[in-house]
Image 1 (tube, rainbow, N blue to C red):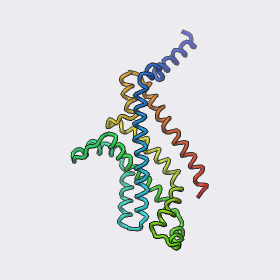
Image 2: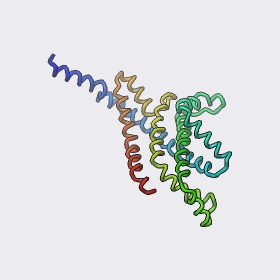
Image 3: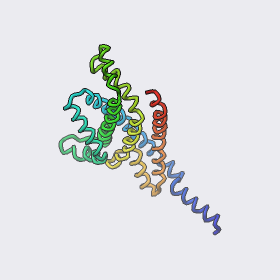
Image 4: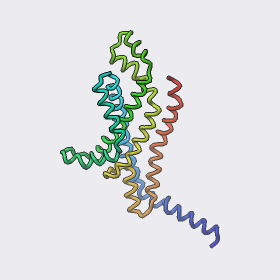
Length: 233
């Protein structure tokens, strides 16, 4: 066998192992279904996590010491805990206190709490960076403290928080892959099962491609926001 033939044979073996067309066609519906589950749980996490973080940041900005300390404790705890530990706790431990939940719900709840903790810190940093005169000017115009917070401070804080918050959203939502540990039928779980059944890693490559398809637009959006939002402060 010549060197050219050996190289061609090695390339054919590589393609057969990782880019097997027959295996890809067979398991494509499973991977697409898993991608749909990943997309659904990701959207739920983003909506509840960001909304929760915003609510916590506004509570912290209320100026009440007890509430502020509770919010700080929440943010510190859920940023420190590994998401996998939370997933295992919600899915396996909560049934002992009659709070059983599906794999989807456990993944949603665990990662929403993590994202809320990071979102709170990002939004609070934006609020803390605003000049004190912003609030005083709003109050002098007849606004209540709550109106000043909602209509003056929060919009500016969100503008500053968007770039770091977008990056954090990407980081947390990628952890939906951890749901495979508790049998969530997301894209990685389907890809792993398909790879085992086929005896070929092509479905795992398809799963990786599905993650790229899902997250590259989000990454590009984050880069666009990083380039555009700061200039508007």
